[in-house]
Amino acid sequence: MPGRVLKLSVLLNLVLLTVVAYQARRLQDHSRLSHPTSSSSTGDPISFSSPQPTLTTIAPPRLSPQTEAPAFNWSQVESSNYRTYIKNLRAIGCPEQTIRDIISADVAQNFSKQRAEIISARDHDFLYWRTQPPSPNQAAAFAQQKTAIDAQMQTTLSELLGPDATLVDTTPYWRASEIDHKLSFLSQDVRRQVETLDLRYQEVNSQIKSLTDWNPISNDPAELQAVLTSYAERKTQLALLLTPEQLKQYDMVTSFTGDNLRRRMARFDPTPEEFEMIFDTWRAHDENLAQLRANDQPDPGNAHVFEKIRSALGEDRFVQYRASW
Image (cartoon, rainbow, N blue to C red; front, side, top):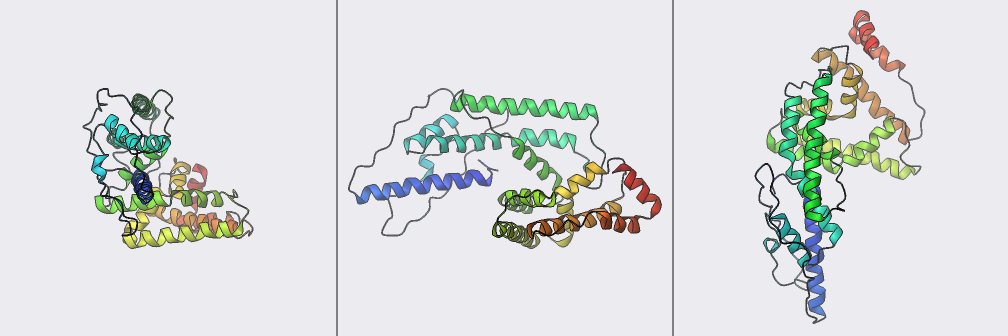
């Protein structure tokens, strides 16, 4: 299905690798290849409020001549009907838990249009320097819509996988839809590449935030250095995708520093220039804190950060800024 998240594609390829390797080993033993029969129901296809897209075909990996199995096409398994898709996955011996992971991720992604619609309605005038939170009525309406969409998705999964189907944590999907809306200043192609990169480094971003908050994520110095290295790699790859101006705006929109500032300055109402200056100051401090914590060095405190902001804002605006913090 178009728009499938990276995790789904990786899962599908892993499943296919397992199946093909299994076939090769069985052929080498001159044994008959057997497939477990499907135990899924043959009821009507699940219907969605929006048209259900066609599953994306994934080309099977090529094995060496010594181990190459008979021709296998993923189109023999894929189907736009989820029940048929599940039946076919079971027929090729796909583990039940893997089937649940694939279908859960796919169904969650299938509701991306509904998520995008209500996020667009809530954040239609989003500007990275705007710090005013939504009104109580807006927040309540959004929460109600979000709950309804999540409930519909969980009902769909229960119908497909049974009443004991594990509930899906939809938080990452809502976050991805929110980021996608806020990155509308990028072309769709660049946006997809950036989002894929962000998904790959999602855990690293979380680890860097923990270090910035002075929360130890490990007592192993080598592991902490590996986190810093991965974070530097992410920044390098982003710089290859974006212009310096785009990279700056992307960071202000998506980073935990930017999110924190928009919450902290809800009553300050900064200009774009003021927000950018304050962001640059705190972002440098946050990244330095992660470095210091990973290298077991002392916390320098925040006084120098506020002093730099005072110098840039002037006394009157700085007083207003601190009063809103």
